[in-house]
Structure formats: C-alpha cells, structure tokens
Length: 164
Image 1 (cartoon, rainbow, N blue to C red):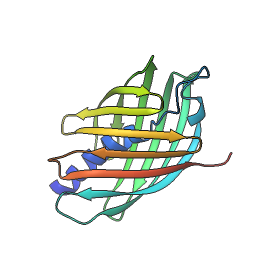
Image 2: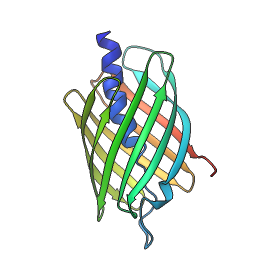
Image 3: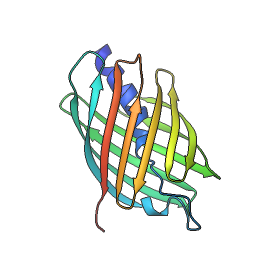
Image 4: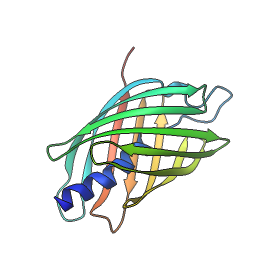
C-alpha cells in the first residue's frame, strides 16, 4: 500500500503540471488555446519496475483571460486512479499555482517559467519534488516529469485536444 501511495503522490504532482502546457508567447492571451477537453495516454516508470501505461482526460477552464486557469484531471492505469484539480497563474514568463488530488488527499505548489512555449518547472508537496518539461503545439501537448531518487522516476504523457 505504501508503494502504491508513493506512485500516486509523484504522479499526481507531475500530472498536475503536465497538463498546464502553454503555447508560445504572443500578443494573444496565453491560456486561451487550452480551454476545453484534452485526452491521451502515456507511461510511468517506477524505479524498480517496468513501464506502466496510463490514460488521462483533462478539462481546462480559463478563469482570467489568458493568464489564469483551472483544470480538472482524471487519470487511470491498471493499478490506480487519481482525480486532480489545480489553479495556475502566469505573470510575464513566471508561473505559480497550487494543486490538490482528492483520492489521496495530497497537494502542493507549482512554480517555473514559460519561455517561447517551453515550460521548465518544479512541483513540490510534502512528499513530492519533481522537474517537469512541457511543450504545447496547436492541439498536441507533450510532457516529461523526472524525479530521480523517487519510487516513480519518470512520467511521460501525450495529449490531444478534443474537437468541440
């Protein structure tokens, strides 16, 4: 049970920020292109086990045009499920926010930078510390989380925006 909770804790933080990808900085609002539903698949790599497939769906709601959003995320694999919410703000190229996973009652902070559509960020909670790289281009989003020394050492997810 302890190992299962460790996987979820690292995955929760990673998934939270993974799903807050941003397109290149332009004159138009930054988050507006994310509004709507996204879905996709990926893998998780426990440090002592083979890769495991994961399926995810996320709904983005832009709450302050271009600069603030909320997200609701649901992910599942054969071993676990998570239900996550987050609030993210952008000021210039700086990102900050918080996340909370309701199944396992874990939460924490997100902070980093978005420069020319590349996000480099850190996710922290009581039991989570991870580095995240995110790229969003049009209707596709790629995410990589690396947490060396953690039981869940890597998470990679590919998402596509669903048609309206």
